[in-house]
Image (tube, rainbow, N blue to C red; front, side):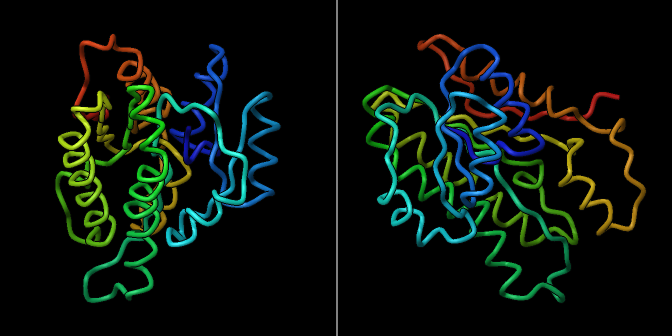
Length: 225
């Protein structure tokens, strides 16, 4: 199961998994987006759940046919809006915390019984901002620091059930989100300076494909050029 499969890292991961024959369950924010994802990945299942409204995720899922089996849950969707603490409004704080932290927590809670049965794997795509907060990044970094705490706690809680938990901390990655960040920073965007989504996807697949006797708990990825 993948969130954020429509662009950037999520699209790269979904494409790689689809090409090798994995069965995908793609979470979309609305029915139109679900149709787009299904067309791009023939044979994939889709679920509609708006990550910006985590209070209604469980309700939305209860009105859909859920997959019989989940082996891995990949939290890749994310949003970012820069601003200083003196500028950020509660609405901006809430949106980033809802999508980047509360929605992953709620999706994990909902599918945890299945993941326990399969001794599954939960992967959180975090950010360098989840390790270090810089000026202008308060709301996003707070949500990503919270995501780290969620992953660390989940890892300890679910170890006895055989559920593996991995946090991936990419640096700046060439994507539509990164282009938006550069616009907010007033900087020119050059995708060649940053990590390719394919490189992050390779890291995620490496974590997923490890034998059952090993797990990558945390891994940071930085631009190498």
